[in-house]
View 1 (tube, rainbow, N blue to C red):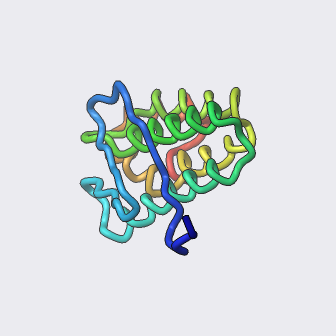
View 2: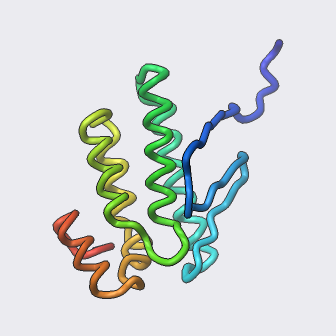
Length: 141
C-alpha cells in the first residue's frame, strides 16, 4: 500500500489507569482547570514533543512501549483533577533515569516547566514543599 503522505499513526495501549484523564487521537488537546487556553495548548505541545522524542529515539519495541506508558503516567500526574501528583512525577523521572537516560532531560524539562510549576503552586504550600523535596527547586522557576 502506498504512503498517503498523512501523519504517521501512533498506537497506544493504556491499562490499569484510574483517577486520570485519557486523551486519544491525533488532535487531542489538554484542558486543565486553572490554565488559560494558551497554557493548555503549550502543555499539550510539551507532551506531544515527548511522544515525538520517544518515537525518534533508538529503542527496542519493549522499551518504546514502556517509555510511552511512562510518558502517559507523567501526563496523568501533571493533569489529574485537583493538583498534580508530585510523587508520581518523581517516579516517572526516576524510571527514565534508570531505563532510558537519553530522554530523562526531556522529562525533567516538563517537570520544571513554569506551567507545571503554576499547577503545583496552586496546590498550596505542602505541595510546593513536596516538589522541592523531590526535585530540589521551587516549582516552575
